[in-house]
Length: 366
Ligand SMILES: NC(=O)C1=CN([C@@H]2O[C@H](COP(=O)(O)OP(=O)(O)OC[C@H]3O[C@@H](n4cnc5c(N)ncnc54)[C@H](O)[C@@H]3O)[C@@H](O)[C@H]2O)C=CC1
Ligand SMILES: O=C(O)C(=O)Cc1ccc(O)cc1
Image (cartoon, rainbow, N blue to C red):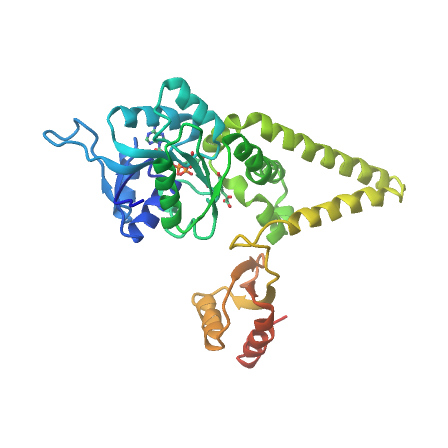
């Protein structure tokens, strides 16, 4: 299936990232958003050209795209789909909303044409919104769910598969109901849990915040996301998310009770806590790695870096010189000190080479 022209409706984080990825693969991209500033910025970022729907530009017929990608909040997907289908904006349609059953159900209720529509959802994103946060490589190697229904035309499915492929993502075909149950576990409930942990920090003391390390940053990163967007996501998947949160809340309550017992001298309560921690390790170990397979066991080389411009570039230069590929990098800042620790993840075999090279060049490797 050839995608020559794609229309992106909603030029925020996901719409603009998709547009940038498609542009890079030579697709012509038309952009629309109810916020003119969002379209302007997406255009300036090189995501495509502005789309003028029927009647807005005198004498011009609207151009019919091969595929329209609806990248707006979940509650607006079905109404946008209907409006676009009414003017024949595209041959096929998809959306990228984080929930799937509810928008499909609503589209059916509104009388949308379900043959030309295959709902989808990239499992990649950021805690930031808007076109300014978009990245053309956001979807590389990431899962991208697609949920054809019995009514979906095979050609519509092929068009959506082609879009996913062009964005460099891995298609995962799943029913809308199974999708929603799955993302409740791997995305939506974790988001609420992160918010609950981060909410503890709102009135934490300055001393506590001054001692914050990478752990709390990891656990709360997604809590910085747009609450309006997330309310819509949680509303659209309320029961499956509630079910997972009830299980998490039960584990947390048991852990708190065990710790109370421990504080009162009941040493046997350690068993319960150990069991939870071990179940946590088992669950964490099951998360696939960045390319979709089992998580690779990278070695982490720690190195002190001064908080000055150019230090990371120098560090990467050393990696380059000794032919070591950087799989991941994480910076931990030491509060109040003019230095931090870079944690460079590399293939296990490369760790010794890199550590030796850093030592030789005068880097402090703890
Ligand atoms: N934020 C994330 O990490 C991810 C979000 N998603 C889904 O992608 C969709 C978009 O989310 P983001 O790009 O993060 O949000 P965003 O807030 O960055 O962008 C949404 C854009 O849609 C526009 N918009 C809203 N209603 C509209 C309408 N009726 N017609 C035209 N434009 C409209 C807004 O003006 C805004 O520019 C949502 O459905 C979300 O569930 C999917 C994967 C990841
Ligand atoms: O920021 C991250 O790492 C995310 O995982 C973001 C995200 C948010 C919503 C989705 O539907 C999918 C992914």
